[in-house]
Image 1 (cartoon, rainbow, N blue to C red):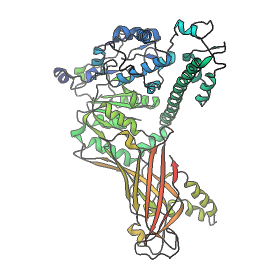
Image 2: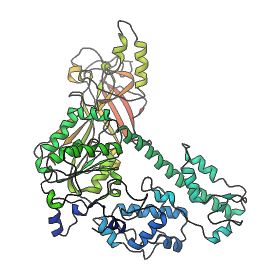
Image 3: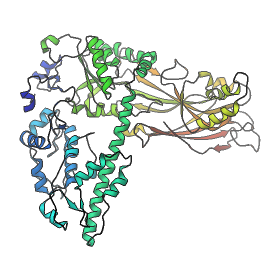
Image 4: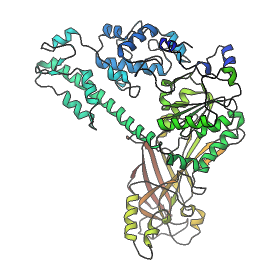
Length: 615
């Protein structure tokens, strides 16, 4: 594998990762695990090369390297095309996005590895296609890479002619605000505003871009264009910062050992993964495995014990990545880059831990495209989709899993049913040491009608049959399919229908099953269920309480002539519900809407206003 000059000069540079199949792969001319370059923790400067893993302390050094090693002369392109600051941002994000896809930025040709891509790179012969550069879309104003230090350090001088057009004499890098007062250049404005502590960046941008007196329509048009560009960058920057804040809090929450103690102690959860990994030797023996969101590394340990030839464990929490590394080392399973390939034959030291998000794995190690045999992840959240980690798993599947490779688990299903009074807090408040506090219970129940409750529901509190809301095929689904709407019908269960009189339904409870099916787990398929009818898990169930309870009865009941459906006089024989679950505007949250219609035995209907919940 070609190494950068900086790496060649460093005698301590890490050796590329190698697998047991490397010699066979080399003979076949295919890129194997010997081409992997594991960087571990960030080293060198803070500016990452656009094409390889080299890092630099200065912008000038980075661009000199890109020109010499990768045929990408940034300053020449800027000069020839007359690119302004925002176009430069677009260009950098465009190039980074193409490199992440293992595609040549100038011709679009795809490659199977970064090594092949870097050896192919060439200057672009024709920058414009139909009069437009490929990076013209405003989508490239949004940083492709989180915390891209290059964007923050980028400084582009204006041309002398542009300085003169501002109407006053000024130093380079300064621009007139139109009233003779010097304003900071766009690059400095961006950095100044993005570094402030205010929570809303847009008003600050409006203030920075406020123009005093204008001189003619041309100047006003130019100012509006600049202000619009500022705002687009500001919004993209603010959005990226908000996402980063949520991610930091999310990964930070998993730095507590308490939550890992709870998850590891969940025998349903951990036992299902253990059985799926250890009891399917035809899948794991000799396989290369990617563990997304590894936490303590327990799934990676199972994979190593099952005979995997190589395991890469990824976690966004710096603390947990460090912990997983130490755990693997303490158990004699940590991969050692310093051990020679022939000494690794049959070795159990197969685990490497990388501190990163799955979407940024290629920025930490160079992974051959579709390089893993098995992708394993415990990604599920409350109501299955809370925390939205599934999108990271799907990204890893599309970018790192071999065609036809296994994903564990490979199916997920959301189910639901109606629950009775016992699923609320009302029974507790009705008798508190012999005193009636039901007034508190009613208020708590009304609050529950606005917020979902995560709790363990007893099976005896389920009053209807179970309905399947939605199923996911994790081997083929698209990220957009995470948002869905399900319509279903609920009727009283046999046990509830056997009880004389009316049964009151207080809301709908959701849970999920995930499957390790025989598609990949040939020897022993496994089901991980969070059903209220089975052993409780740390996921519990997710409870959505109605604004008011709905009376239900078995088929054949005779309703009163004038009563509303769903009341004691006219109980419903069926509830028709529609539930939508979509990713919320707040990163990693979900919005759930619940619509309910009661239908009596004579066809009478009554619908309630839609309820909106956020989780």
